[in-house]
Structures are given as C-alpha cells and as structure tokens.
Image (cartoon, rainbow, N blue to C red):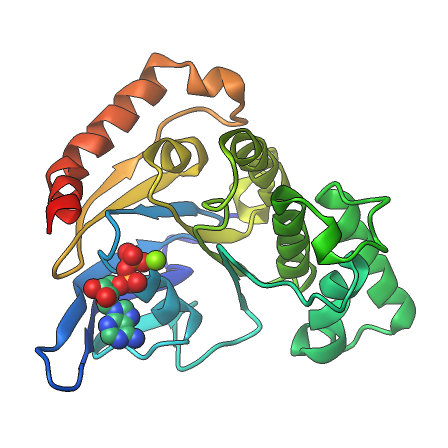
Length: 275
Ligand SMILES: Nc1ncnc2c1ncn2[C@@H]1O[C@H](COP(=O)(O)OP(=O)(O)O)[C@@H](O)[C@H]1O
Ligand SMILES: [Mg+2]
C-alpha cells in the first residue's frame, strides 16, 4: 500500500511564522518562514538550541498554537485545532496520579474520541495490548509514584499509542531520564514505532530533542533549527540502515552524521550559553 506520488504529504508546514506579542516589550519572533513536508510513516526529528522554537513548531502541528502566518495541513486539510489524528507527548507529561498504570493508559479511550466505537471488551483488549507493548505487563495496578521515570514515560507512551493517532508529536519525551534509561527507551521507541514494518505501516512521528546523537539514532531525517528567529537551517537525511541498535551507535557513519549536525548548530548553541 504505497502512497502515490500525488498524495499530499502527511504534514505540511508552509512558510509558518509565529510571533508572540509580549506586553511592554518587543514581540518575540519564535518561528520564521518555516517550510517542511513530512511524509506518511516518516520519523522526523527536530533539533536546535534551547529557545529556537522547537516546541512552538510542535504546538502548531498539534493545533495548540495558531501560526501568525503561513499554512499548516494534515493530509492536505488545514489544521485548526487539536484532533484525534494527532497525539502529543511531553517531557514532563504528567500522568494522572490517582489512576493506576491501567487507568492512565485507558483514560483517552474512556473520555476521548479515540474510544468511540469500542465496547468495554474491545477497550480492555486495546489497553492490554499497549501495556504489553511498552513492557509494563505486571505493573498494571501500580500508581505513578511507585514507578521510575523510565516506567512513567512508558506509561505515557502507552497512553499516547492506545489512542492510535496517525501522527505522534513528541516534545523531548526522554530528556528527563538518566543516560542509560534514555538509550534503552530510544531502542524501545523504534521497536514500538515499528522499524521492522514497511514505511506505509508505520505511524508518522515528529520528535523533538536537543540531543544530536538521539536525533541521528532515531530519525529518517533531522531538521536543524537556528534561533532568533527560529528558522530551519538544514534537513539532513539519515541514511543509516534499520533496524537500528547498539551496533548503529558504533558506526563511523553515525559519528559522522552527529559531527556534521553539531557543526551546523555549534555557533548557535555557543551563543545561547553566553547571551
Ligand atoms: N507563550 C509565549 N509567550 C511569549 N514568548 C514565548 C511563548 N512561547 C515561547 N516563547 C518564546 O519563543 C521562543 C521559542 O520558544 P520554544 O518554542 O519554547 O523553544 P524551544 O522549544 O526550542 O526551546 C523563545 O524565545 C520563547 O521564549
Ligand atoms: Mg521546547
């Protein structure tokens, strides 16, 4: 089931601008003239220094922010607000502390449009399959405070996936985790995304990180942003084979891509530390 050449891209950002008017100060141009097409099934990662507008771009795709200029579409339709075709996950995506793992994963299916048409049994089955997929079988009755950071993000991932959105929008979801847990969850994320499946059977992912090695490990393409105003500086094809694993991280090509992307943002990142 390959997409025909004439199909619109899954997501299109067409000359997006976003200006924040701040009372009593000059307006902040968070994003300027940002144009990018994202394909069905693509894993697209946006990197750039702190404050360059990454979250703003994601919020525009999520429909949580309206752009000040330009057009943003999904399957050729204008994005005017949030929708069940797009699911969002944040770094500190607060789980509901009064719900168990199971209750958190089930939440969107009980209370959101994603559960429409599912009877109780189908809903239970759906929750179970995603709890299993993220490796939380056996922890269903635990509460968030009983879980490690890595397990909490597994719950957040299962909750996101259980709604089965076409597009996963992920804003630094691994940033708060320790280095080892982060590497493990990078592997898991690719498995859950379906790197063993054909591209047409994969979900489309827009993933934000400030970690360049994470970007290269995960991405089909890396979009590099620069700041003030937030612009797209380059889009890098990551031509590393899939499935990817620890051996990928040791490849000279992995190192070369990481170095190349770092060279693109080094000056910007340096300035961000001194201004
Ligand atoms: N609601 C807002 N009001 C005013 N300025 C904002 C708002 N949201 C973001 N900004 C500014 O826009 C710029 C980009 O922010 P953001 O998209 O959060 O960057 P990043 O995610 O890359 O760190 C920053 O200068 C930030 O201070
Ligand atoms: Mg951000």
